[in-house]
Length: 620
Image 1 (cartoon, rainbow, N blue to C red):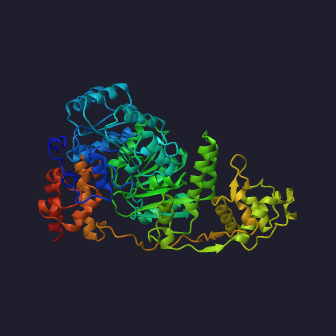
Image 2: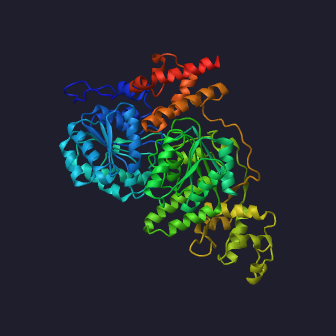
Image 3: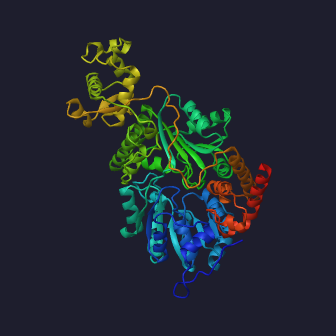
């Protein structure tokens, strides 16, 4: 079944009401913050830059206007592997949508091109490379265009966290089609990134919509890296057994190792990185989208544009390169607004590894300076004793007072101590040993250990030898780690990991600046009940509710497999949870559930109502 209504210019007929289309097609009763204003702006023919968190409803801001405005909406997406799933979701709603990329055989490409000429499509998804081909640009001149939508717009900026050179050509469409409204959307964009997007796409400053970045359903946790694979396993088995999740690692080798190890521990997991064949990557990604409870272990090559709404956790075994990257990656959890986790392990080794990657890059000095600033902000987030949500939101310019009661620092407040004297001892020791040694040797000198290296370099004669017996070796390593993260110390990644002083440490050495450290927990913190904001619809908790939820998930999976689509495009978890909570008995009651539009009501209503009736009769 296809959803269709006349798409005529406002001068000839009254324009369709966006709120009616929101309910009729998408099954929602109300817009999220800023969505309606953005949609009205685009419907009026104006341009917009939309900065919304992942799961905040960016796609609706261009999909709904494309359904109403005359012509076809051209959606520019960077990953052709995901276009099929985005189009599948629209087809489930009854929209007229297609994608056009190199994965389609040439005969099917010609079919889509003819559909464009015939006005038979509301939306078409294309990659930037396809869009800029002369033949496709000539085709666009032949047809009516409703709008251009540029997804993942931060890719156009050299200051963004995922710059893609092919995106630079997109400024040409604004030159060729100046009267077609253009909407650029992204989940994260700091000031420089935002300014460059506006400049390259020639978008007006008054068209910027930056909604709140807060994702209150996500719980943020950072733990010190001790045995990361075992820590990850405990996290999954304590919190997310049977749930879909993403685990990010820095290297391809580590991705393969962790994925294989999780399988050995009884969890379904697959690897994803650029070193795999295109066929293997596509297969693993499709499994993640179409199966329940699969874990993907990946480098940052995985995730952009992932629409799977019921990812219940995102774990980082290595620190991301920026708060923007971290926020975008963690935002792939809990897109359905149900509780989810962002969990990360962190160590001094992560600091060294990330700075080594940065210093070995071919980027110019200015770009390296910007990236170093972003890296420092990321390490500051790891070491903060404040509310983590507050730190993240403040980074994006959103003042959040906290506490959020849904991050590890709020759930179990961190102890701090005045480490000014300890910092001075470390800094002095590093200076007196010539800034040529790593953390291990510096700690040995502070503790007065007569090691072979201490004797060889005669460091037992230094005034700092043995002055640090009040702390253990582990505690001194924590001090050094936190000083590195705060940029008072720098690890020489080009040499043998020697630690050097930075200019920032001067006031500390002179006693002009206090330094406070967090106390690293000795045992792993006990699990505490999370005081997360209560969602309007929650995942079922009682055995009976859970049994019905599982039955509905099985039904959803069967229907999805019959059609060759991901389960979530049939209904997402929050809609299934609403079925469990409200137990509808008629089609009219079923139509009131969030996420049930007219097409899905006719296609699936009776099927799911029958499943609910069978469960209740069995229960009785």
